[in-house]
Amino acid sequence: MNNIKKKERNWTYFKPKTPKDDILKFVNIKNPEKVSTRLKKAYELQIEAYQKIHEDFPFVRFYDFHKQVKKYVKKWYNDEYYFNENYQRSHFLPDGYFIKYTDCCSDLEIFLIEVENQSRLKDEKLDLIINWWMNSLDPNGYAPLYVLEFNRFGGFQRVVLNEGQDNGFELLKSYMSCEIRNCLT
Image (cartoon, rainbow, N blue to C red; front, side, top):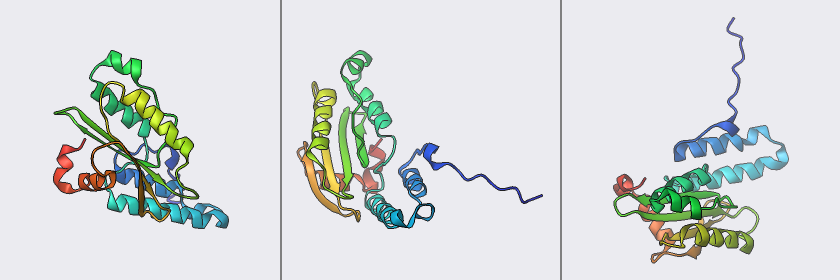
């Protein structure tokens, strides 16, 4: 009677709500045990890189980029009509992201993380990111955008785009400290 097989969860449709859930989903989707030997090492390296990034930057998210950006940009515009007129969904997906929004002064900062798997961030993708940012976010206000690149082992490599006044990498590290966690949304 207890021989009923439990159906395994389909991680593709799992909706993560926290950064820890994001890592759990990523690890289960890229499960090296379920792929050919040809892909096994590649998946193991990807999981290792994302886990290292999550370890160093615990609030960085890896899923639901479009939904989260839309949510915070709508708050930032503070005007439904203006948001509907100007905001355009991006035509790219970053490997990871962190959005800092402060309600009290309506500050918005966006950090995009790219993980170098085979090659560095290409100019075409960087152009897509810059065009989206300038056309959807920056026409009337100032929302700093930072694009950071990490190597395939999860180590920081370089700041690709730094549209704020501070170093994007150091700023992101400072936002990950527990002391200001209550300030982050």
